Length: 286
Image (tube, rainbow, N blue to C red; front, side, top):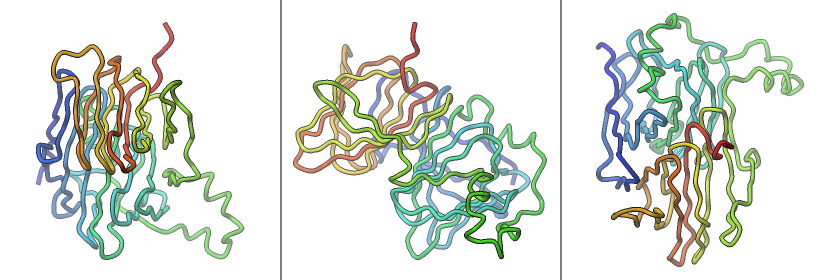
């Protein structure tokens, strides 16, 4: 099967993206494996999707579907356990629900659904495929024909060689204690945990307690929001209708760069949100 590019849903302005309306796509072939994709956003700045594998499922790569891209990627595990490996270096990592894997451009990667639970992973990817960073780029790279998933030189030296192994990792696992914590806002101060932030992409998580709302905020890049749990209301300031969205678990939202917005938890349970912003989280100084 020849490579075919994935769909690229784009929006002209702030948009609620209900789970039921998310674009479906099937990636891969018999050799690489087939991966179900739910694509929320794929414009000229950011690519946001959820991919899924059945219990014991795997994606690898084939000549047509090569998994080496010119982008920064964050893979956040929504459910199940992901084993991710770099078939070029031999490193392998286990990523549990609520944890993430981060890697930069030119990193080969394969993934497995470990255990008896289906795997669902939220992925942020920037620069996005529309910039020629995914399949088109991968086809220009030499194919990897001898994958490996072990680092034999570390056997007999573990855990003494842990620092050496960490220094050469191409894939970073982001757990709770690895986040960069920020208190953002004044009147509506909230705790933000940054999972990864580069010159191309910032991904973080917000928890809103019952009755809590954020201050008006604005970013220097396009934002893709994903609701992990609860119901959140999003207000777009200075917007023509619709300027108020109600989002439930698995729903998304697109907010263009420079648009002021605010999040509300109007319920009696915490709300957890994951966001990706590309290219710049902070508004660049004038």
